[in-house]
Image (cartoon, rainbow, N blue to C red; front, side):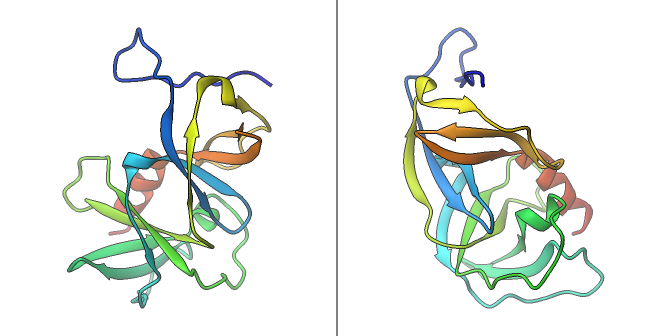
Length: 160
């Protein structure tokens, strides 16, 4: 296992900590910077759409915006079975700059927890699985996945 370097905006400085969320999905936690999450909400009704991949669950209304909702696990290659109905949704800020995707939602399986990530409190663990996992880590003693959000956004944009 190796230590994971957490970079700040300045390439020569390391932050002392990063406020993050441990977001529960079907099989593990996703570790996301707190600033990437616009809001955590109860799962609103999902408007399903035809001719989309199984990971593209449909759309939800959030603050009068029609927002796509996806299953991270299925998009990452997990075998599709009957998905557990999400009980919460993480509304993420789009980072691609594409005006068609200012926000998107991840289906979650519980209430995310705030955690503070310190450089000395995170280490790389198992090998990443699937194209949407940047790295598997142990953060503050818990297993988590750092997702490839840019790749996930590109997949969503391809199916809008």
